[in-house]
Length: 483
Ligand SMILES: [Fe+2]
Ligand SMILES: [Fe+2]
Image 1 (cartoon, helix red, strand yellow):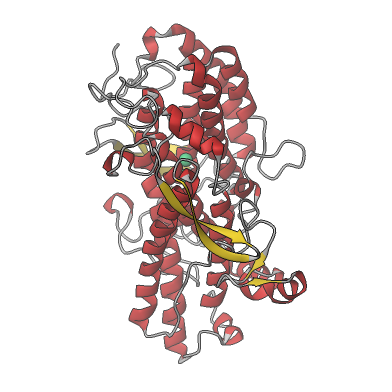
Image 2 (cartoon, helix red, strand yellow):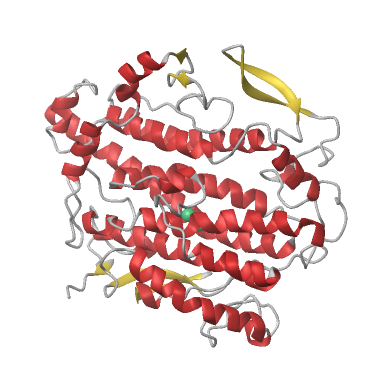
């Protein structure tokens, strides 16, 4: 069967890539499947594997109506391989090969590069599932629990998407990489996941919302730039993943908004005006806004590290090769080869943070990170709107890019959220004002009481404005099966 818009469900692995006619890859994936299920059962959501969850499954790649909603037990979710439709006459849109027909096979000279990009992207997908595996138990509602599991099964599908590319286009070493994607573990000392932010804990639901807001948004930026790839199968894979990714960021953005709303409501009801009167606010069973700001500082700074070094010859090579472009590459008006162009990069010069013009080609990471920061700021404004509406005098702010960094220009300095460099002793004294402390974590943990009755919500969060798939307020999003 040729590649279609409709997904073929007759094979064990639903797909629109004609797997039936590609026995070699079908067999390889069928062999990989048991290991994946094994990983899902041991490292996926803890508990709830026999519960019926109201999930969406991709049944088509038609932008309108691609998903079907129904109760599914997670291990029975149909993880499929779905690529956006092939665009007739698509070309390589940037770099040294600009104007050549897009590649349907991996160009030999870029094989290692492409494999590396696919493996790094693939590694993040199971990592986040591992990070989130205990959250089901403390879900603030069935609605939120369902959203968590939706994100989890889709990250699982994203792993499938990358593994398909490895099996289909990279032969023996692709198979080995696919196996290793099931071996590494988030936070494991011996075989950790590849990127820092994916080895951190996601200890509570506020972290989950911040993670899906900030870190899944890094995922979006990476997928956007890989969707520009001259290697067409990668581009098409990423384009479909982006449709799913949008929901992950929605979960984060609305999750934080709902926590903010609940806090402001509770403060109003209790007549508390000062958002910094933390003991008084916490007594209300809600999360104070300054602690939310600290969580945002943490997740934002960890996510910035995912963009790598500001000035990077690797990024320049990827771009030149035509394998990884810029955000919305085709909408940018320039030569798409960056001959002689420069880009302002924030750097540490004699201990001062300064903007320095660098060749645009080596500043690709910086540019993507700038686009990311702008995107983060937009959603944060919506959190601020919610606070404004309630009349509480507080505003969220993204910290400076030099704050709490472990990669790039600022990794060796300490800086305040306003971007003032400071000494180690001063940092140690003040850091608990800017990042969640142990006590903050313990307080949040104390609020993480499961709330599993249909239509009910934990004390610290408001109900959503609308349900999933237009379901009413008391819809039973997860039918919990207690063994
Ligand atoms: Fe993903
Ligand atoms: Fe995601």
